[in-house]
Image (cartoon, rainbow, N blue to C red):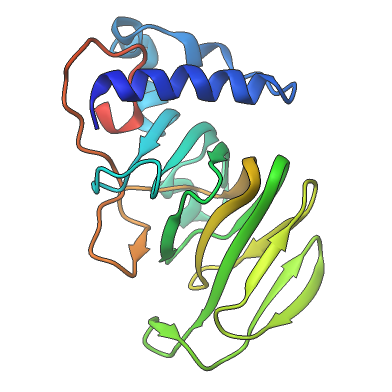
Length: 221
């Protein structure tokens, strides 16, 4: 992706988030020099901030995701079972923009439709080796009520609805009937090591620096 495209996506995304009355924390608007400073070291260490990804494929409109991590604990706390064991993100998935099939080894997460269009989540259970089981049903809690779905079923979340995905559950998602504001509440998030994709793709974008960054991305840290 060109940095100019990233900068434009950041501005559009911030406006979309604000249109729902959701305001990002103050550090979201720090300039690159301040985000590189000693003051910002705890933010960088926890992976907080902007995250625009096309999964290294260069087709953001077709396959990509806008994310902002507002809070995150540490893997060390998670291993000890005490401390800040949680994370939170706000995301934007555009209409028919795919977030490709993947699973997490450690992270459990609630995916919440915060507003806009309808969020479609394709689901598979893992087999004994952790791979996609294309025959077995998958059971997921939706707002606390368990739902049993066939392999590859498309779970449709309307604004206000959510699903809980436990480690190992394979999922891909996209929006229909408009762009969708998506919340994620999870255990500690480690995007560098805890994403297993079905396709041979990367988690982050390759950035071509054709203009200065408006804000640093998590991948710039």
